[in-house]
Image 1 (cartoon, rainbow, N blue to C red):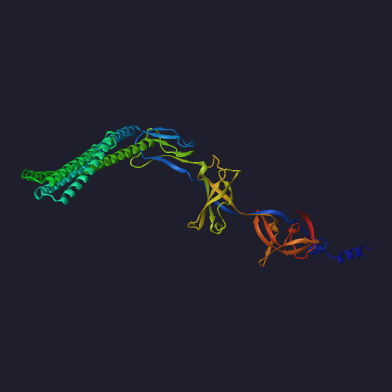
Image 2: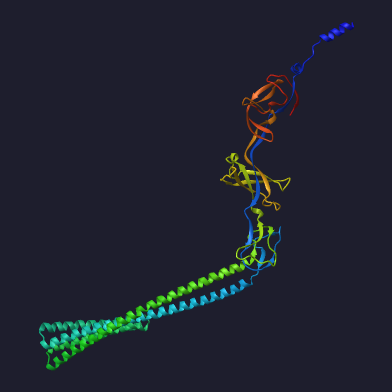
Length: 493
C-alpha cells in the first residue's frame, strides 16, 4: 500500500504559472474611461518688474536740509521726499520777478509812445491833405479868374456882336445857376459842421467853391455889360490890369499848391518814425518774454528744491542724509521707488512655444517669495525679438498686486493655450507604443483586447483620447498581457 501511494504521487503533473493564468486569468488592475478636462499650457519663467520703477534724483546744487522718507515707506504722489537749500534760488526768483516787472513797464511805455506818435503823424497827414485840397481849389479858382480876365479883355478890345451878347448872357445864366447851387451846398455844409458831421476843412472847401462861383458870376456879369456897352480906353487898361493880376494870382496859387504837396510828403515820411516806434515795441515785447522765461526757469528750479514723489509707491533705497551736499554738475540720486500697481511678470518662453502665444491668454503664476499662493494674470505684450539663446520675452499683467510683491522676485507662469472640456481621458500609464502605434488593452468578456488609439494632449499624468475609446470602456492599467489573454480583475477604479 505504501509503495502504491508513492508511485501515484510521482505520476501527478506540476501546474505552471502560465497554465494557472490561463485557467484562472492574469490578474490585472483596470480603470474606466471617464470624461474630464485637459488644459493645454506652456511654461514661462522670469522675474517681477514694474513700469514705474525709478531713481528719484536732483540736479539742484546745495545742502540737503531735510530728508522726509525712509526705506520701505509708502509714499503718495506729490509727497515731500527732501528739501535742497532754497535760499539762493529764492533770491534769484525775486530778481527775475523784478526784471520782469521792469520789462513789462518798458513795453507799456513803448506801446504808449508808438500809439501817440502814430496818432500825431496821421493827424498831420490829414491836415496836410486838406491843405493840398484847398491849394488845388485856389489854383483852379485862379485859373478860372485868369481865363475870365482874358476873355473880358478880348471883349473890351474887339467889341461885341449879337451872337457874342447872346453867348455872354447864356454864360451869365449858367454862372448864376452854378452860384445858386453852391450857395445851397454851402448852407448844408454849415449845418452839418454845426452838428459835428463834417470837418472844418470840408466846410472851408465848400466856402471856397462858393467864393469861386461868386467871383466867376460877377466877372461874367461885367463881361455882359461890356459886350453890350462897348469898351472905353480906360476900361481896356483896366481889363489888361485884371489879366496881369489874375496871372500873378495864378502863379501864387501854383506855388502854394507845390508847397502844400511838399508838406504832405514831409508828413507822410514821418510814418517811418512810426514804424521804428512799433519795432521798438516788438523789441520791448521780446525782452519781456525773455524775462518771463527766465522767471519760469528760476521758479522751476526753486520748485525742484522741494523734491516730491512723482507717483505713489514704496521707497526701496535711500541714498542721502540730511546735511550732505548735492553734486554739481551732474545729478544726485535721492531714492529708488516703485509703484506696486504697475508690477508685471516678465517671462521667458522657448522659440517652439512662442508661436502659440497670443495677447490676452490667461496665466497662472507662482512666485518663489510668496509660498502657498498662486496669482492670475494675462499676456499683455509679446516682445517679437529673440534673445541670443533664441528665447522670447512676454509681458504678463498681474490681476492682483500685493504689497509684499517686489521687483526682482523670481516667478513661474503657466500660460493656458486651450481648454478641452468633457472629453475621454485615461491615465498615461495605460498607454503603450510599438512600431509608431499607440494602443491600450481593454477588458472585454474577461479577455484582453488591444485597441489602437489617437492620443491628444496630456495634463497631470492623464491624456485625452481623441479616437479609439469611449466613456465606460475598461482599460488595463497594471498587468502584463497580450491580445486575447484571459483576465482576472483584481482592482477597478
